[in-house]
Image 1 (cartoon, rainbow, N blue to C red):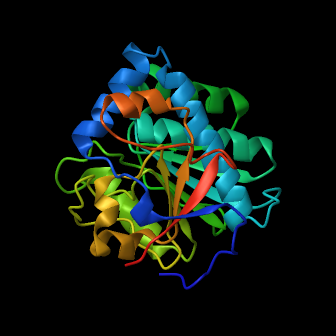
Image 2: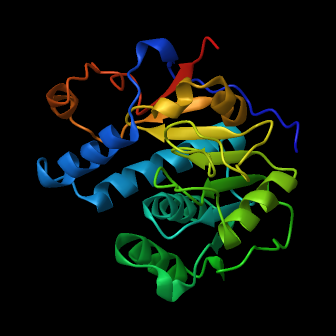
Length: 257
């Protein structure tokens, strides 16, 4: 496990206690309402998530300049992995040496994540499908997009092997939404992403899991990113959010734990 400490970012900070936290059921309803009620498509949400993840990776871990730096992206076949693939595309475009490894074969990807993977193939990004990667050089950063909030039980197979490999490598880990191996309700499975410098980018509102000290101990710095969820959607769910992204698309949450 690395003792690498990322530089301090200049993102606005909010006390975590002042921000509502979502249960898994509420997160599922937010996703449904975004697509069915507001017609904000999954492709748009995935692009917003991956774009903000790439911006945070560049500012927080790559000293503002990704050019020439090695980044290992670990991606599952779901929406979490799709966001990581968007991040991979952007970091590649910014000059990073990106290596993408997926938990499943290329043929097993479907829908929008398959579309994102196809783009990377057409761009010639280094890809290791359905296998734990052996990067040509030690990565400066690992992106964790292995498993999102759909986690059911302990990670298995290649996903579990990827988590173990990420924990063994001496590089900081930036996780998308929740670190792989941690459920939205706060259950910590084995294996789970852990590192001294794990940084989690959660989306729209933090998951209820981040109220648990055991989860925060594995999370590292916690950030929120705007994926364009309308405040009216939260109001309909009885949740008061306000305009937390008025100053920046990314804000840092400060925990009192």
